[in-house]
Length: 438
Image 1 (tube, rainbow, N blue to C red):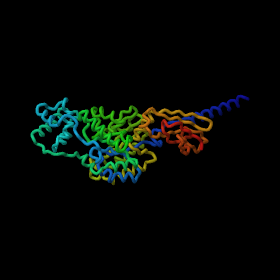
Image 2: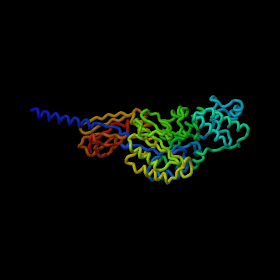
Image 3: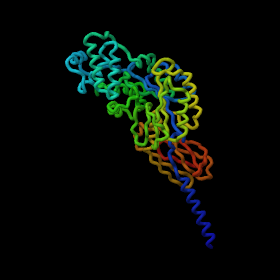
Image 4: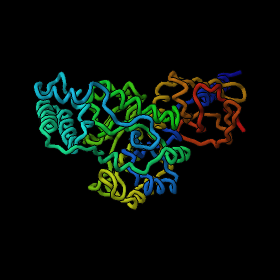
């Protein structure tokens, strides 16, 4: 064989080897379905008009959402708001001789909502906001004023509901179960919509754990993955005790591969250098529709943005209430981009990202098929969202069958700059995935 034929033979062998190498590559796409970005629609407080008027819009458009609900006032909940600690009368007497300070503030704040006087809740809110803003002296002074007014009889006896609790009236566990069965996510917004940062640890854990317990008892473990601590707070004390109670909080995610830009932040997501950006935006009565639509456009312009939308009131009931007609228009705009955006619940997106970032892949090539091994190192009972795999196959494969755990998917091959590939969903830790020509 002369030199010319030897060279041609070696070149052909190189091409065969190179093609085989390419066709044995598999990667996990950044978002499910290999979309450009993700969008999660979330609602806080469980105000009744969310379900009367906003939910039907999402049902019609087949759009999922996550509802953070206040569990205490829902009929049938085992746990309602209460103070756990010393007799309140004892605390009131003590305030006559001992000013509020760092040693007793959390106990007094925890009891403030349960003193039995109209107007106490307003003092509690003002004091909590001052504390969260780092104005400790003001927080203590406001708390002293509350207890002084209680002792001297300036406040009228009686019980009052916070606006958020009152606006949830009409929501039932039966209706929640029905909506959950349609694919809508429900999660904890605590028992009473309290200021978590100013509670003592006993009352803080009651609000966190007992709300979770009621949701678990009515809906199951699946709905205890996420929570939202009221007022979107990120206060270090609230987060210190809240983060261990749930796998993820919408308030704060500490995953090292993600940059979080919460509602009040002015940072632009396009400047982030992390693998993922969680970008929270809140639609209020002052937010023009074009601005809300621009959030979607920005998500589409990048490949790493998770747009988390936060809504409260609807049609006159709830904080910053928006008309459902505006939401309808906005959700249609999001739905128009369904081919490029993964619209999913908060938990599903959070789980997908974590699974992907903790996954391992191995692709073996046999004579007639590729065998993909997909695993992740997380809790397999909690993290069970299918991941989208992109496997490069021989150029001759036009139609492909993917088999895992006895289930078959028929997918069509596509082309990109690297070669011929197929996209399909697979479950981590569920056995080998076989990819073969149809």
